Length: 514
Image (cartoon, rainbow, N blue to C red; front, top):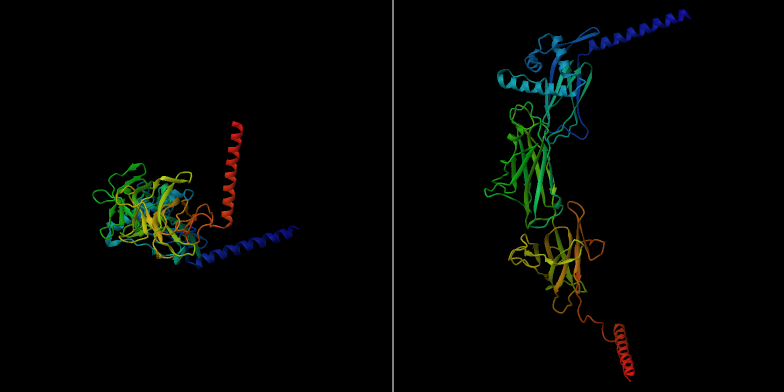
């Protein structure tokens, strides 16, 4: 048994020695590797630049390895490590970087990377004749869909991977000591979000809508100048609310600071394009502080269902250059809806000359007879087409609309544009010649279902009109039933009973008198 134990121990020792030899041979045989850079799920490298700096060369001796500082970067490392750093040997530099980054604390690694980039850019600015280049660099365009990329043929060593073009400089220290190495970076570009006030889920012509744009102050480490410009574009259905000088009235708050001197500059080429330049304001603000911008726009007669407002952010994305990136548009759709009416006889023939008034509703959904909706004609002499009046109290508005004989843009003969979602009542005030006027107003309900879709229902019918057109018919002749019909018989019977009742009552009263 003892002999067997000795044999097993000897065999185990041999296996371990063989394994160590294989490792040593592999280390001595391979001197280059591939570095894979990944981004977070759901993100891409669009508008990003990735720089790779080899701070240390890796040295291999048998089963031992060490690091030799790349002298190209020692001036930068000296500045980053500070005056307390004195051991300027290869091992001293390596130990100091390890201590500065403290892999147990990611914020320290981030600070080291930011400081390194800042000092590198400063150095290159001051020494333009001997600029320090990255070991490897790659920039990705605005339409790039890459979520990962590989840098092949890298000498073994200790690298700083630094990504710019984001809200923050993102970086990581990674050793390349084998055939493959991986670093996972965050790519979170600056962004903005645009919203409309709560009352503007749908709008009517003439309504003033307050828009709010929110963002965050980016980390500008490494940038001597930083561009932060909001570009806003309106559709034809909206107009900016401006001051006497022709600038858009905006309010800006960064953190707890109100920036009262900021204006929205309207483009000379397009009155619906505005730029809000906050480049100087963000320079003195705390990184990560909330940015809130508000302004107003007014809905005009050209508004349609797809009426929208979009904003983009132009921002610096490459330290040491004037390069900028642009975010995807943040859009807000503030729809306004048409009301189309098809006025016909009982045989589906279009009827001209029907007069209508449109009423708003009360809070409980009943007709509000005190609020008749005023309209204007779309253009001069455009019969049958009307628009919600921007100024409901203006003298040139109309409170009555008239149907036409021919179809308008489809299968209807009365068109009212610019209504918000809600409950309305169409009251026929005059029927076409030879036809009976409606006995009661028609209830119309417009309901928003999405940014670009809506439904229209008539009276209390819960089934939406398939074509979003309200069908209203007029009949001819007497409103009473025809002579000789069942209705006439019933009417006669009721009248006879009433007469009989009166006669009986009269006789009874006479008998009482006697």
